[in-house]
Length: 124
Image (cartoon, rainbow, N blue to C red; front, side):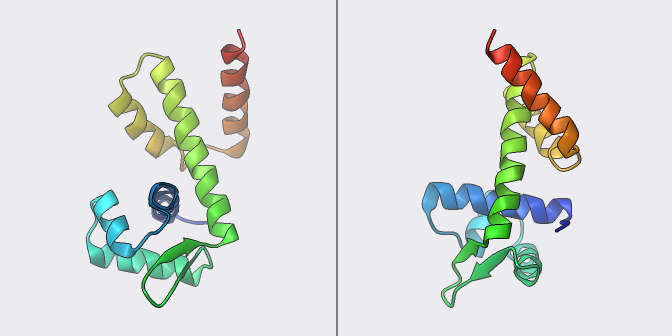
């Protein structure tokens, strides 16, 4: 499944919120991302249509297996890239902002190479 960057950002946010709160609603996403409720409503609707999330009658959102797989992939990319940039001397704020942009465009091949590289230097 191919999602646009915004869809990946929503899935990652849902994943992060669910891991910390164990429940997620559209208002939580809007507050976390500093987006309007209308924007979130549209984004959530698209993700629901694509089979990445489910929403119950009370408005609680859960990731489907496919949605969780994508969210975990994006979250891992964000975490690894942020840590690598910080290790290179980039301040945390800049590193996390840059990682947020990079995580959506980097190829699987390049990311796997980065992980191998980071692991190699972590073991030294």
